[in-house]
Amino acid sequence: MIPPYWQQAGRELAASDERMGELVDRHGGLGLVSRGDPFATLARSIVGQQISVKAADAVWGRFVAALADVSPQAVLAAGAEGLAGCGLSRRKGEYVRDLAAHFVAGRLDPAAWSALDDEALIAALTDVRGIGRWTAEMFLIFNQLRPDVFPLDDLGLQRAICERYFAGEKQPRQRLAEFGERWRPWRSVATWYLWRSLDPLPVEY
Image 1 (cartoon, rainbow, N blue to C red):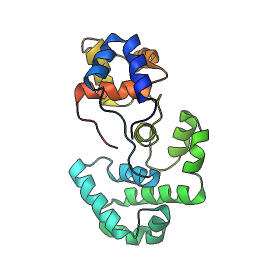
Image 2: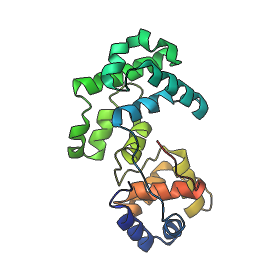
Image 3: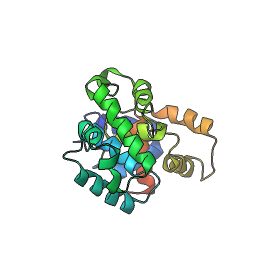
Image 4: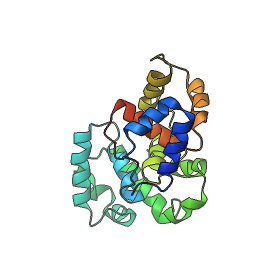
């Protein structure tokens, strides 16, 4: 289900930014859709780090098959030995178990996230080993559907801004951060449309 703010955000972005408006017109029938429960989404993001999509899919398939269900409790019950045959590196296995421990202990509690602002939720997520700021920001955009996340470490976003607004000339990070202020409070939406300028097919996270 597309977020309830999506159409309003598109209209406001288009009204204030002609070049963004072109993207909104071109891709107006599409939008963000949240998929997967929070734990599984984060676990899969850890599994897929630094390997190809094909390899990540294969490892994830074995990971799911090794568990009774993809839950924090099942991961902790399986332990290192139970996950050993999944193809996870030793370090990723430790990361996934640390993620599970955070959920079980309540240090990550999805029921409480609506009361947290973006930075507070990012801080909670990056307390997990193996989850950096970029992964946390992708989670806020694609799973939590937060409307105003601006993932400046994303190379695709950097490239899209430079190509669309700076004639392809690379810009300093601070310049890009300042430039993105024009899209508040809909920077997630602007980011999604900028990604579409590079690849018209929406990505899933």
